[in-house]
Image 1 (cartoon, one colour):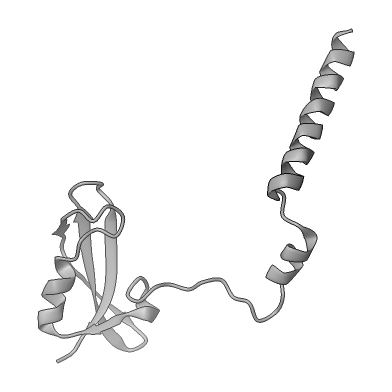
Image 2: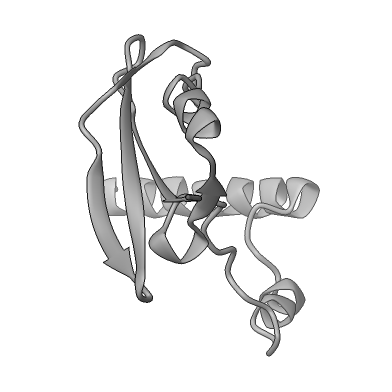
Length: 115
């Protein structure tokens, strides 16, 4: 009797799930998956300054403004941390680190400083 009850509960849950999927399209459809896998579609890359390949070119005045930039997540004030220097693609880049005071999120920005 317990086995039959368990089977009925599972079948009922699957049935309710199928009804919900038909109404709100929860499970991805085959056509959407095929369209997403077509050639030519790419995953989004890094935003400007998030990776060495997308380093931002800035002047010295803009560099200070970048250090004081607010947190992207909570718009809180950030504290500038020690900067690093890296070489990428034969260019000397400055890596600007900051940490949000409110949500403790770390931000790293790669910049190429104009001389």
